Image (cartoon, rainbow, N blue to C red; front, side, top):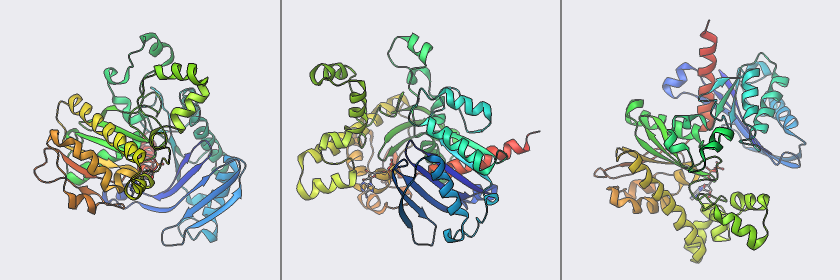
Length: 416
Ligand code: ADP
């Protein structure tokens, strides 16, 4: 079954077509037929298509809106010049899976999209004003182009964390704000953390109820997740993705009173403060150089840049702090810590510097194994004597969305 996976951001579009079915689910035989993205929708856009085995196509064209972007991508996908043998007409796309950022308290798992589901996603717009409207646009445009009969499935970034207990998701704010406005911690990156838990089970042969791990998704956005008996019991992102770990440009945890102080000192309004916290903080804010970890590591080693080092040290320390917190919350019953995301999968240095702070938990990694794991490899990097195993497992949110889409549709089709 050829599944189009769509991730519509506020000014971008990422897509993949993945061929998957019940056989592939068992044998890991899913195949990515194409992946690509359109950045800077609304101005001179950058477009990239990658078909396995063929040279990558890159170009730049003015694209006015999401509708034009999706139309362009779909007509390219079915054209001869794309070189995708399996897709020659719209009818060769059998279903669509959408990444939806916010499902609020309502959506606790992936679901077949109908009018009621669209309204439910619209109800969550206030919680994710930048992302959910773009996600809804994606659903409506696909319906217009590919027809209302084509099954579409919503896969929510928040859903995996819907199992968090109240003690983890409530803030220490007056309770009426939760009752009135649903102000609470939701968590994000849920599809990635769920995929990691699933891959860990595949690697170790354990059942879901035996899966007790801390998953660390370290990319431009970063989050940690405490997974007990296969379900999320706590995660570091909160009401928005701002909370928790230090990230590329987001601050992570800060004392909220700083905002009033900055308002008084610098005359910053809510908009300025929000931009500062989300776009000018984190690795970029501390180093004053870049939000890109690879570049920061280079600045540190080649130029001994003091603030680059400081940013990296704060980044690692914050991760270690969350691991300590989850160690307590999980009653010390953790079998593994798993690194994923661009930084987690590729940087032996960061893994080493995080794990060096975990010696008091009896965690020791092998230098040799740690150096081996870069570029799409998965496996264990801790020594046999380590009290808690440490793994590197590449994430693949698109694959998870494709598989969910397949499963939801087949369940829906088989229901009377
Ligand atoms: P996103 O969260 O946008 O999906 P990624 O998961 O691709 O981003 O992660 C991007 C981050 O991964 C960047 O900070 C980048 O520098 C970092 N990264 C990628 N490769 C390496 C590497 N070899 N060493 C250190 N950092 C890396």
